[in-house]
Image 1 (cartoon, one colour):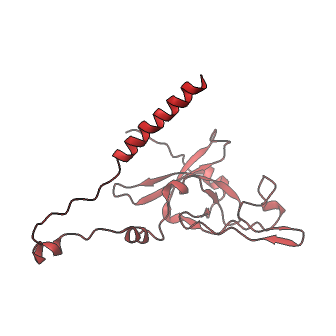
Image 2: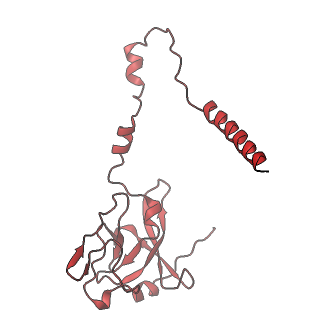
Image 3: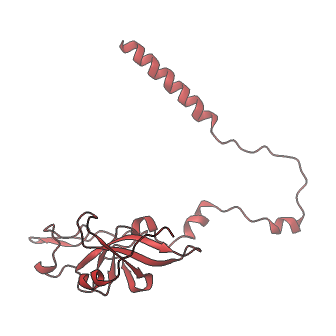
Length: 185
């Protein structure tokens, strides 16, 4: 019985390997055409290299990582989290949908806030006292913590998304705002 499974596994591996080799890119064949005139060459765009492409996006943030970011007010009190980003037809972000209150999304009050009212921060939230300590009883991941005489350094911020968002409002002010609803009309 073990021999049957071993042979079947080897045969399957051989089939998959042949498919993988068949998909390997091949270099284009060189042709003996005469070079294109200089006027035509200047019109053709130069092929982009990997370094050109990666450097042109420096300083941008991943929208997929911004959804779920915690939102705090100026006093480092948790307001909620970002549920969605609203864009116009050209792709520019116009508003941030923030979920306020509720538990695991149940009973959550959604509000849409203009993007220019939200400030994104790269550094972790600084907790100054026991009143502002998170409910989990410890410091945020990545923040500087002190245990006895030793101090653990803060984690390096990720350049592809901010640590959190700050909005100058209280949780009660956000709950008093009209609720944002996704409509189909």
